Image (cartoon, rainbow, N blue to C red):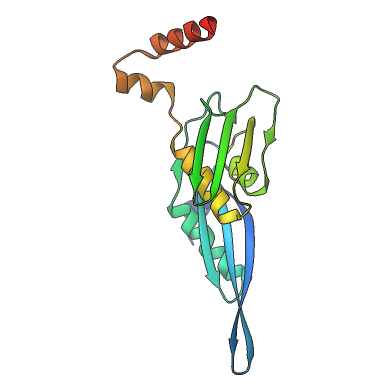
Length: 177
């Protein structure tokens, strides 16, 4: 393995979210296999998740990590610590609500969602998961929500405005409320 590949790999933080042991009954007894769910991120706004299956745990984790690195998404962050706006996501029966939070709040979220936010680099967020406790669906619902996050810059360019005009309108709406 060359040095630049090692440096590229070292920038990512990976978190093992869940390991599932499955048994296949064969003539001689049971054959065990393992499925691993891993979340990988650079703590600067990029994150991905992967699912790997193998006969041994380390091999399943390695496969999941490789898949997670291939399927990374970029999420725009406000002040490199929270989301720009509140957002909902769902996958199957899993529903999540992600809310931007003021500085000092910390990560208030359940297990699989917490792993996603820590590897993403979010420091302040309030999240709630409803509908299922299945870690696979919770992670997928969280990624669905994160894919819907828009930065003010992208919204302004879509509408043909300046970011300052968009922020000014946001302030006016808050005063009216």
